[in-house]
Amino acid sequence: MVEEVQSVYTDLNNSNAKTITHLDYETQKIRAGKATPSMLQSVMVEYYGNPTPISQVANISAPDARTLVVQPWERPLLPEIAKGIINSNLGFAPSNNGEQLIITIPPLTEERRREMVKKAKAEGEHAKVGIRNNRKDALDMIKLLKTDGLSEDAVKDAETKIQNITNNFITKVDELIVAKEKDIMTI
Image (tube, rainbow, N blue to C red; front, side, top):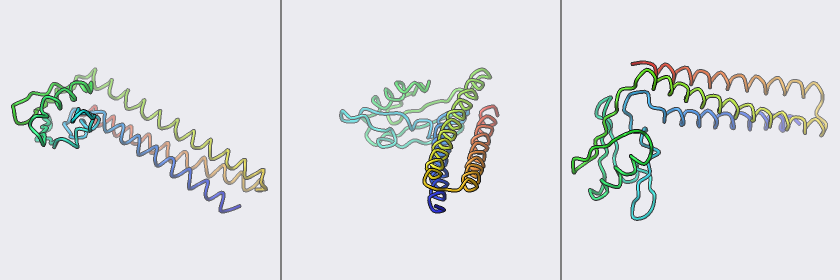
């Protein structure tokens, strides 16, 4: 029985770690006013009739805090990459100089920063819901083990440990969101 309970803890920790990783991935998409190549990671480009991630057809660099440079591996792809960036609804207008695309990142207004903070907090809430769902699944597994003969004391101990694990991951979510909010609001 002890192995099964440990397995529940391990599964809970793994599921919650995946949730935190996903939250980190989603919050990286929320730009904080500084140009980073990861801002374009969701952009898809039409490449020989197939939608392809921009990172597979071009190099993306950030020479300074307000500029992104997209250098395609094949020059004829410039219009397709520009179209992909515009269609991605990121709010960027790339300029084509015949060799590469240059994207100037506009400074964020106070209102836009607040919108981005709201978006980050919403992502944090989605992560918390995921962590709570993982807790529910773990508690359901413990209830099944109880019907298989796990003692009342072991069930209470397991429920307490599951709640502690959940609280730790919720704290991590809060820390990530506070850090992202600080990053967004810093001018």
